[in-house]
Image (cartoon, rainbow, N blue to C red; front, side):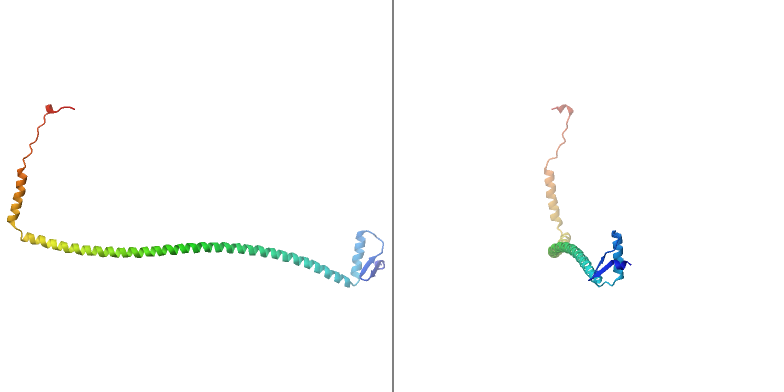
Length: 181
């Protein structure tokens, strides 16, 4: 019945039937479209799909490009920070190597001074030991071969010097001789 109201001409369907409400026209159009074979609908649907797909692909490519740029920027910043840290470590290691070289030279120099000092003290100790033995031998020889007459004469001269000096008399002080200042 409703088919009689419809006119199909070169892939275009037109309705001439009564009922002018938009809902009635849409319902009739829907029934008509489902009743007839639609080669033009497939082509139209293909174009629509292509347009929607192109639009969605464009949006997706734009989002992917934006995300890629953000990720690349983040990685670049991280690499730059890591390189800066590596530069700091390099500077620290160079300073460490210079200090280690200075300390190694200082330790070598101090070890050389220590060895020289030990050798000097050993030499002085040997000299002192030799002198001490020589002196000990000389004292023992003098004690064994001492001259009692010479010793007695020397002591007599010392006693005479002491006795030649007058003895100091103690002074008596009385309070009456004391004057206040």
